[in-house]
Image (cartoon, rainbow, N blue to C red):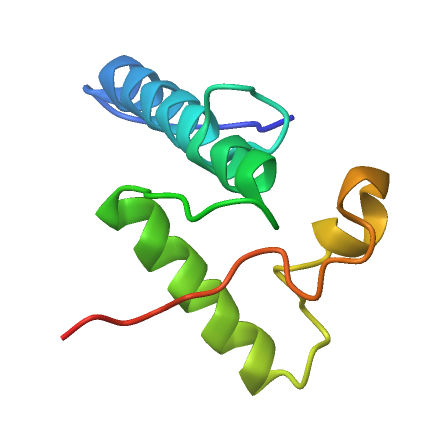
Length: 99
């Protein structure tokens, strides 16, 4: 649940924009929505490579860097330890950088 507040002449437009962006991000990054890119990654984990958009790649790259910086206190790969169907996988996903 998210709560938003905006003030001023353009408050209603600002709130609408925030709601639209939140819905867009959820559609792309939710592990619970079957058509999201994260769901695609989870579905293909341990079976086949999976292509994702640049924005998802950037979010996951940042999350991986954050995990390393805080010595694992935040772990973007937690799903592989909490999801029975992927038990035995050594990683939920892997970032590869192509130059």
